[in-house]
Image 1: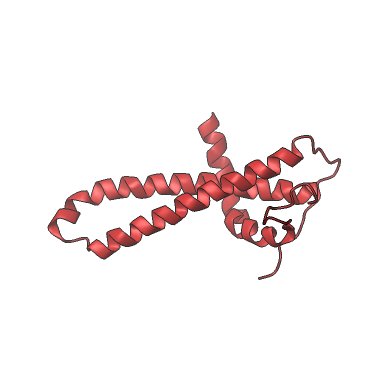
Image 2 (image 1 turned 30 degrees about the horizontal axis):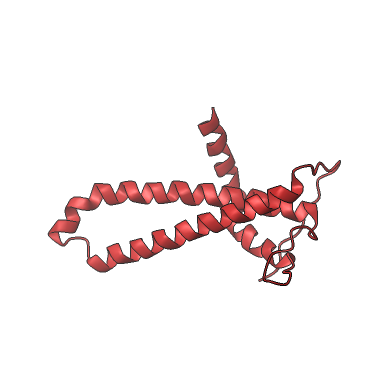
Length: 133
């Protein structure tokens, strides 16, 4: 049941483009002294949107990383024969490293937003538009 719920959320996320939305919502957050995000001063609707997009992004990255790992296992015999160039494997390593950092940062953003919106229950949902790149 939980797996089905996650699959349906990720399928719906493809339409919304959560990573793109996350990146374009971040400019709405203020930064306090010490380079800390000002969650407390942000609008709750903004925090809720960031939290949702960060959470979906994190789960998508985790699932994609697992899929890449399975593909690497499947092609591992080709690595020994030289059919798969070493620079290709190096590039995949760097990509996986960056994706891991992205997932960890998305988790931190989602947790920070959740802390300040735990009791947020608007009567009518409010949508904060993305910043324009």
